[in-house]
Amino acid sequence: MFDTIVIPVDGSEYAGSAAARGFEIAAHHDSHVHLLCVADTGPLSGYQLPGESESAEKAITRRASDIVSEIERRAPNGLELTTETPIGSAKSEIVTYADAVDADLIVMGSRGRGGVERLMLGSVTEHVVRVSDIDVLVHGGGD
Image (cartoon, rainbow, N blue to C red; front, side, top):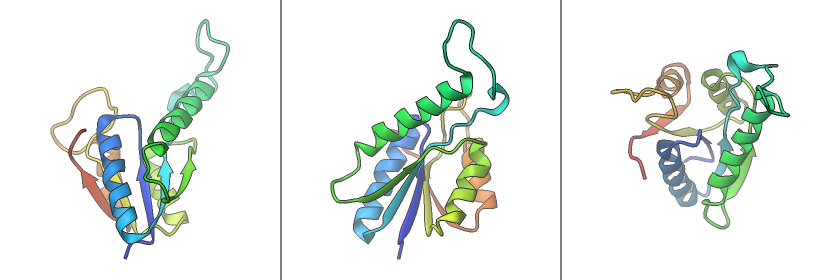
């Protein structure tokens, strides 16, 4: 039923919990999982952090790779898994990537690492739910 599942993560506990749920679904359906962490550099693109040897974009990209690696270690053995860390806007990159890999399901947390806790869905999740033609499972629990 779900041959290809995209699981976007951002380092938040909600994303980690959603990834665990996505891994369960993937194991049950023998799905290929695409674990995705968007390096959302936004207005920091090309900016050099004061006192740092690397650009803000490189630091954000490195952090995205670290997040994906940490979640990847939690995947059950034998799960077919691809990891990606595209650079861009999380809102658009998640939808674009899921379309490109012909995903059957997107599994994501109800909230992310946004600065202010929201009473409802996080803005990225809300956008993906509204815009994507792919089914989206929104997992609301933390760890």
